[in-house]
Length: 78
Image (cartoon, rainbow, N blue to C red):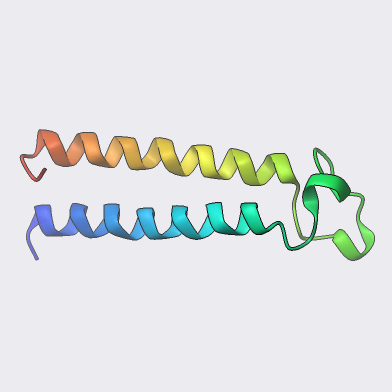
C-alpha cells in the first residue's frame, strides 16, 4: 500500500469515527447534557463521561483530521 493510500485510509477512518461521535452526541442517549454536563455524578452514570468531554473529543478529532488532510495535501495525495 502506498503512503498516499495509507494516509487517505486514515482520513477516511477518522471521518467515519467523527461522524459516529457527532451522531452519538446529537442522540445523547444518556442525557449527559442534563445529567453530566461538566462533571459526572457517578453511580449509574459512572463511565459515561461528560457532555463537555464528548465535545472536547470531537474537537480533538477535527484537529487531527485537519492535520492529516494538510499532510496528505503536502504529500500530493489530495
